[in-house]
Image 1 (tube, one colour):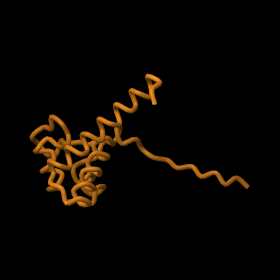
Image 2 (cartoon, one colour):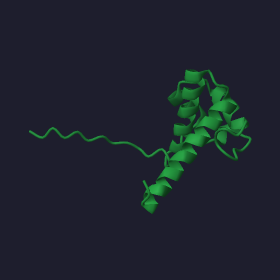
Image 3 (cartoon, helix red, strand yellow):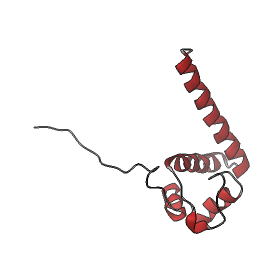
Length: 103
């Protein structure tokens, strides 16, 4: 008997999320997402119309990190964004070091 399990999915970068879908995936109100987009913390260069906003898997990952930091540390959105930015930069730099062969 073969116990292999196959899971099918859709890449989020090809099937971007709407405002409501992102809010639901992060367990927040859509107003939370709107506030973070308007302040530039999420979705760089967002158009004015909310109905055309689309979020990728990177946006979802960032939004979830922001939510977690805001909730766990009772941080305001600016502090949470700074922490997420620094974490992402550290991850990028570590990847560059790995490529360069430096531990």
